[in-house]
Image 1 (tube, rainbow, N blue to C red):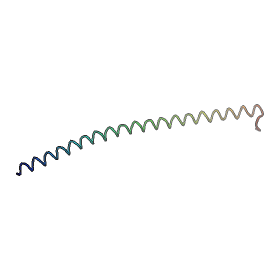
Image 2 (tube, rainbow, N blue to C red):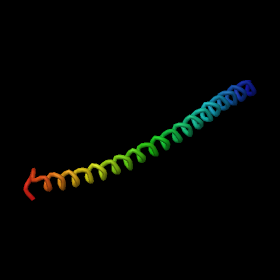
Image 3 (cartoon, one colour):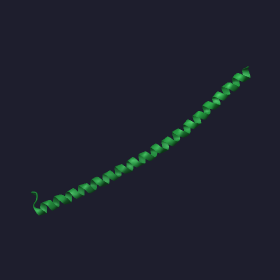
Image 4 (cartoon, rainbow, N blue to C red):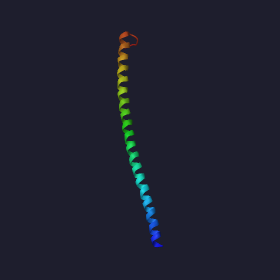
Length: 74
C-alpha cells in the first residue's frame, strides 16, 4: 500500500516538474520576444527623433525663404 502511495506521489511530482519545465521554457521565450520588442521600440524612438530634427531644419529653411521673399516680416 505504501509503495502504491509513494509511486502515485512520485508520478504527480514528475508531472508537476514536467509542467514547470515547459512553463520555464515558455517564460524564457516570452522574455526574449519582449526584449526584441523593446529594441524595436527604442529604434523607433531614435527614428522619430531623427525625423523631428529634419522637420525642424526644414521649418528653419522655410522661414528663411519666406523672409527673403518678403512674405513675412523679419
